[in-house]
Amino acid sequence: MNDAELVDRAREAFEGAYVPYSEYPVGAALETADGEVFLGCNIENANYSNSLHAEEVAIAEAVKNGHDEFTRLAVASAAEDGVTPCGMCRQTLAEFGDADLPVLCDEGDHIAEYVLGDLIPNTISLQTLEDAEANRATDGK
Image (cartoon, rainbow, N blue to C red; front, side, top):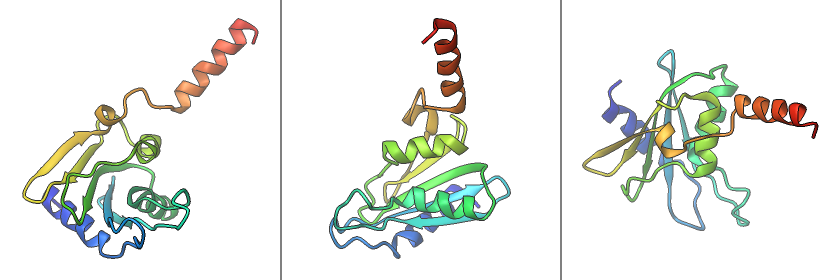
């Protein structure tokens, strides 16, 4: 599947969005290491903090189905405005993807491409937590 086809799948995903408050549907298409594609759409809640983002829905679906290695993510909104994953979704992607994970963003007649490490440098990782623990142990704190 090429980049444009993956973006088309993200466009397909936003059709299922539940967005009565923002009226801003977003879709995500997440490709796994073995080529499967999992879709997600945003699902809003009246208190907003309980809303689900398209990327996290796609990640959850993939992980639920036994996948934890991803090769690409495409994100699209009905506005075709080049929406990128938010900080929370970027951190979640970093749990499963390397810094060079391509993130494709739909700009309508163009696809903007980023890599995850540029979108969220210096993520919190298992290594970050282990380093902090080691520092506490050597500092006696």
